[in-house]
Length: 71
Image (cartoon, rainbow, N blue to C red; front, side, top):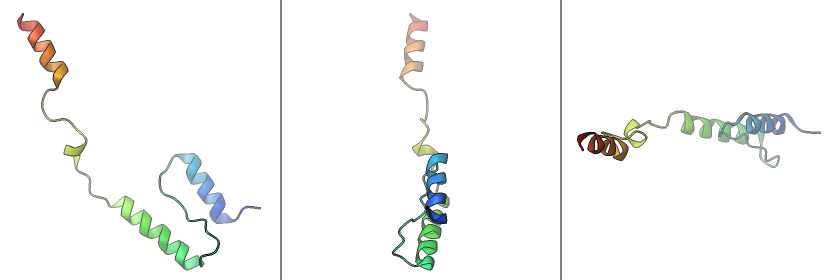
């Protein structure tokens, strides 16, 4: 029979979330809870820099369209 932590971990894995629930039964409960919250806070409050995700200015497809329009 699965423990509550193992059940939560499997539900979390099926939902597509990347945060993991510690399932190591050799650790104490407080250690597992602390590890979960440490990882949660680290992933939840990671700074977001949009310039790392979005292209600035027109790309090569736009340049090709302009070149074709001028010809």
